[in-house]
Length: 227
Image 1 (cartoon, helix red, strand yellow):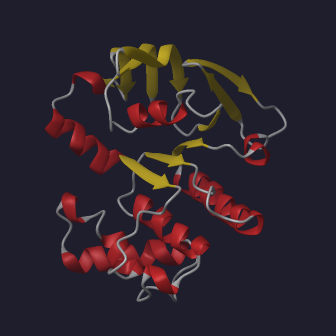
Image 2 (cartoon, rainbow, N blue to C red):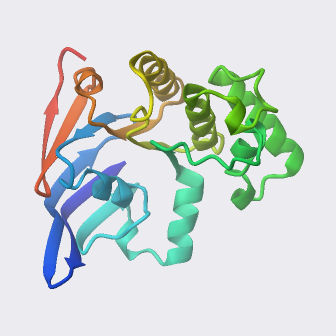
């Protein structure tokens, strides 16, 4: 699935150069579930952006299914994101004037899916995350947990190979956090996804089959036999 080799990512900050990633080597197999932890500014979100084809490395290779994302022209990179990668963020990123169903449908528009099929697929995936009776509700009419379920449905409606989540439970209380993680884990298993998640929550990290820790741009990965 993914093979990262000698990946670096640097940013200019005034006269200084910030090295967000410093020689990262990482393999992520198809169907893997990897949790990424580390201190603020350590490179977690930068790594997720590279995996999601939202950014390019300064040096090194980010290979997805045999294709080096760093070398793709922008149009093909956009296509990879649209077709193969679903994103879930801490802030939900829902359009406030659209219903739950319409928000989910937006992920299918760039793929040229016809309106009738968009409606059917959106309704189906919303039902799968427990929102079958909330299709016509606006984000403001739903709880934080329900909004995150809509965001998960939007990420999954295009049937991606990869699901990337950046602090998906960061805005939720403990009870709702557990509900959302149950949904994410079930979707991972049922759909055969490759699932990579950034989190500060140690309770979530302890349950991960694989845990990557990033500090000062360098990564270590360990297997969790008890997960």
